[in-house]
Image 1 (cartoon, rainbow, N blue to C red):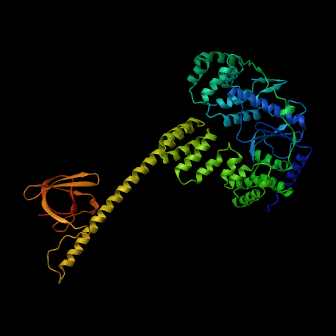
Image 2: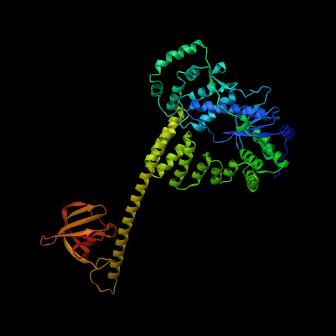
Image 3: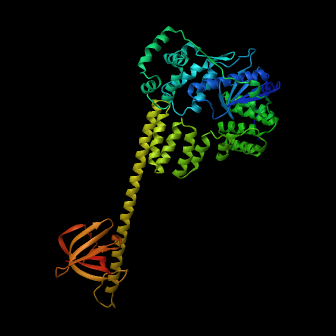
Length: 561
């Protein structure tokens, strides 16, 4: 694929040369992958710090083994590549990516912003509900200043002054106080499950929130914040964090991955992946190139890059999950990353019927329970599939996990508008069907009268027998009855005609299908047969089909003068 040259080509070449310096290694644990050219010790020290953070944060959330939807790759290097690099966690071709400074000290680490974003990511990917207000960010800010001291973890160091809010002080007081730390986990769990603050505090501390407010207010006013020192999780880094050489295919795309994670313009990202392809074509570089082209809305070129990626996948070291999804290979993308909801959302969008659509969206909602839009789509599909009870639960979930009150109100309004529109559509469809049935009945009546007139005209022509015209009927042989019609009992689509003959003897006939019965007077004009008592009773002539052991079935009704 021919790409136009950019002025930053020299910069990209320098970045690639910088990353090629030294022997690059890889080590991993949990969701973390560490790449480093700073030696084994620096790589293991970074991974140890990350794992201690994951352990302690998970303990506070009540989750022993925190996971993420996408891997978190950390580049530990003493010589960062030239150009843009992510200041904190950034999303890239195959997950999250950040740069970790390999300083001279063993405890070198990114700043609090990185760990705050890492904490928020753990909440997003592991916590099914939402905590009220800004509690989640406050919780993440509290852990952003966690530090390691030997084999210990120190929690509760104050953040920047602007972030030392009353809410932060309350959480810091409760989590660093040994008397309340365990109960605070119960509090957080209750709040995330949707409990109101009053109920959550009573469940956690067995006393109302107001009973703790005075203590917290005094603590905040004093401004002397205590920290808590906790034992670190025992980890034998030499055994657990095995070191392997970093694969060249990954190193080639790393400068471009860093640009994408840093939010560089798509043209820069595209050029960086093209540089990797120029060095040696590979599926990872073609995947990144395609994603950059899609960001530039160059769909045709992106499709060519995706096809090139697909052709090289057998040799890939990596999943190319996002590339597979953009190729429409939803099932394969879901298999590559079973925790990702998007393949199921895309599959649902392709389904014409609501049942299968609801099936895929249910899978997506289970994987991404904090996404109100997925719950909204699921509720709509379930409603259309007549899964009313399930739709009610999904609408409730959409409102419960809304990010703020405005979004929650929007979800409630969307539900009301959607259901009203569906009910209106159902009513309109019923009205349309009823009108079609009525129009068909009128057509059949008109057709029958037209046939009667044609028969009369034929009989009145010169050369005809000259006998009086008989009423036309194209069904089985009929018989005639003349009498007085007293009552028409209607029920559903049927009717019973109650008559008396000249001697006063009662007679009953039935109308099985009103669409096949012609009703007219002696002038051959079409008239209506009304339900209920006939006031006054009318003389009529009935043409009927005899039914042994049952009332005759009416073919025509003629009102006589």
